[in-house]
Length: 592
Image (cartoon, rainbow, N blue to C red; front, side, top):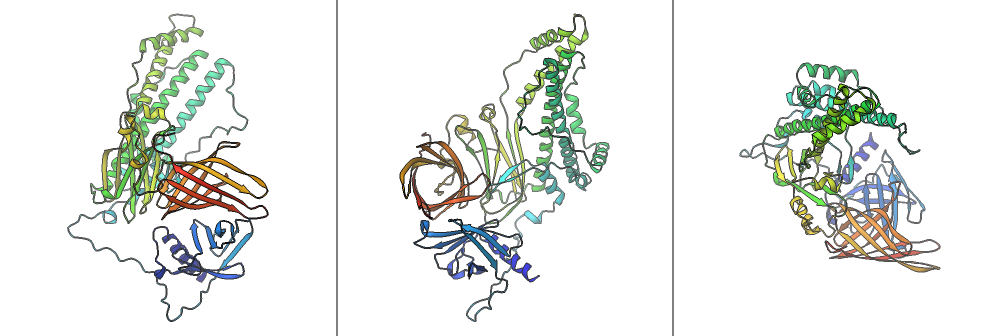
């Protein structure tokens, strides 16, 4: 129990450092480690051994980086990168020369001196409610079932650079379909049914491909390393029973009406007829599944809005913006908590109505279907030829209806910490963006109720007035997302000629002092070789490391950022010391 207490305290203090900077006079001892042949002390202001010293430490998840200032070290610092064990008692790793580093947590810290004050971890005082203010947040009585079902309905998103995948499992729906909340019961039933119905699209696709292969007698080419087709998971009996009860209670009527609106496919025989039938089946299923998802998200949004109770006392704590990635796709939407306190249970929806497609020609579609349907039906009076024509007309109309449906996104974030950012892709391609006419967003949470507001940046981009980096990012940010930095990098190594190339960094993500980017090299044998980078920028100092294919980071670059110029160095020791000096200038917006 004693060891567990030390670990819990250590973890809590480390987590607090993500959002708080300590002054030297207030620095507290976080932990003491037996490091190599001695004992080191980690302080809460990120210093080692001395709160005002030059040695520093940082922690990301369980990766602990120790930086020891030494003029003789490559780059002026010895850098130990170690991983803390799951139980928090040991760590192992290497320095930049790949020499092993290890340590053990000192479990019994020395007794405090009389002049020292003991470390006290106290809970912050609870705020005193203002009687004149409408209660929000935890004061609003909302069933936990609401948040559970909204999280299940949510799409994938990125939270502070980490992907949050959607949960497609069915068992969590069972208790929610029996919830005391009528809104939760309906959304849970619809969502569980939609998860099952999605497999109809997969089956329709396979049937369509099979019909074409059977007609042409040529199998579809498949790469040797292709993944096998997914197999539909078995629906748990408890979910089947819950959905059967939900149907009796009328909770699935919304989906039933959608299926009734899309005409059934005409049944045919013969090779050509089967191909026509399965093709029409595919487009019908595609439209039904899409319409069901739209209806499901509409119900889920109504539930999130009701949970917010119309209270918008914290509406100014949310910032939403769209970012245009020139030359790629339009559609990264960023949601940020600009306040100093957590925002709980944040639901974000996006809606992008589309332009109508050019008028079709149902008569010509029917004639074509009728003619093709006669390939294996010589009798001109055969009603199956008519069915083939009807199927083609329906398939074209259903595909048009599918592509004219508004683009939608629905995400639910259990907690958005102060300064935290959530990113979600609104469009997958520039073609999707080209079809749209507008974009609106809504945000609902306890204390937040924002409905149908225009997405910032959309109109400017739609009229080909691409927002500059300064207009979509904080003007105080020295390294805005979307900016490009370019310039020479010179390598020197003992015994080899100097090498100069052009380096280019594109900033792809920002969160407080952290950033992500893509580093490319050009010239002297390099032709756009790209690597992901992660780093920090604060108080004129910039640091970044390259991310390997295994997700591990290394090759630490350090330097300065002043206005529109970045200067960083990287050094390696060993038998053949190597050094690189990189000077990057910010590329003006709109310039290639």
